[in-house]
Length: 373
Image 1 (cartoon, helix red, strand yellow):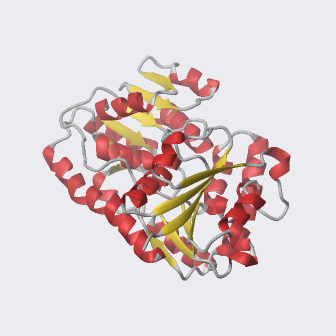
Image 2 (image 1 turned 90 degrees about the vertical axis):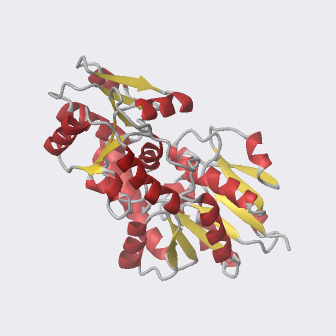
């Protein structure tokens, strides 16, 4: 008997050119390979319709996101209210297929009584209220600080209201514990993110620079890059490359103040992977403890040494694969020790023992299918 599944995506999940769509796209591919008939619903607000998605789905529907003041609600978080769409609701009500909601962003159907008897699964990408609280601390714009703090307050109330409305599938164990502790969630389980990486391909030996990579238009990543430039590589004469999408002009100027630091703006996916594999150290501090960072997994599968702080790895099960420091002096000390230290077979073996067992797309797709049906 055929198994059909509605998937509602917060964004168009192709091309796979930023961390947030890795899990979305490769989950679709993996479920398709397991024979699931996917009815995909995407909110489109700039990425366009993508023919590639039709290879894996029996149908793909697109919906506009109501941006700006049109999407604002005084009761709902903007990330939810801007994706409230009557056409989507009507399409989901046409049959009895189960529904996978990708992110709190897409959870508006949980507020509609017509969906109370439907099988619904919510994929939790982050504890969103905490994520937005961290964004408010990271940005330097007073307007954005107010917006992120307001959104965080709305999200905290909203996430509490939906925590027991359906099965929740979280990307990290720490998010599960937080949802249980803060919101009393009872039906919540862990499912690792889906990835394009099937095996560890890190190169042994020595690379020639340090690398921080991420979407530099995100306040948290901009803050991390500035912290590295101002606090770690300010007097550390080791080459540092900052790379990522849409860096600010201020970050670009800061990166070129020193002769040993530079910035690569908007590299192609291929260029980014090339830098990750060639770097001697992938340096990835984080100021947000929720979720799982795709850039860390990318670096562990494809790069040499990884230097992180506790918020990046806490509760992920990946602590043993990284070198951890929690302040600028600790980062400097670790970087000096590792910069001329070859990435060796022992460290490769450790990653091969941990990563493929946890991030196995086929096994995790089978688990999700079991939970749904």
